[in-house]
Amino acid sequence: MAAYTIKPLVTATAVNTGGRNGHSETTDHSVSVNLSVRKEMGGPGLPDTTTPEHLFAAGYAACFSGALEFVAGQHKKKVTGAVVTCHTSVGPREGGGFGIAVRMHVRVPEFPAAEARALVEEAHAKVCPYSHATRGNIDFSLEIEGA
Image (cartoon, rainbow, N blue to C red; front, side, top):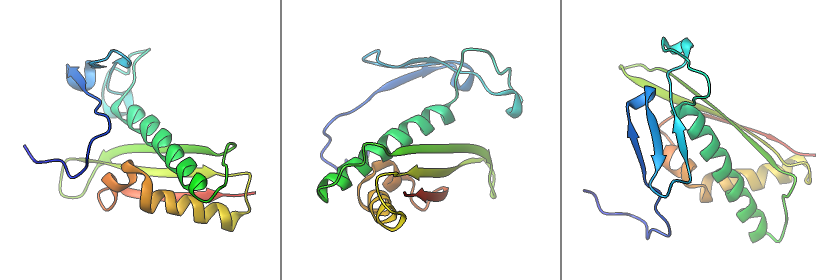
């Protein structure tokens, strides 16, 4: 097992049984989801289920939003009206297997476009752990909208 390159502040642990047509739950029971492969991917697309991509999109959007709030706070600003939308896609990739792509849209209505862009780009480049983990590993596009 590789050593951590961070000093962990918190660790989330989840257990899955059944893969993409199974069940995932965190050990503290704060998240419990049934999964099924969507019809577009050849699966049953069962009602009241989710996918790993949905969970990734929700987590990345929340993490990115928190990073943006942190950066704004460092600059003595507030981005209380900011909205982060993370579109996560999955599909075959060159070389085999599957990969993910993310299109992140960030709206910061409190600031002019240039100021919003500076805050969002700093959050992406310097703070967000999801951005650090995925940088150079996935197709990623960032759309920024200011006032």
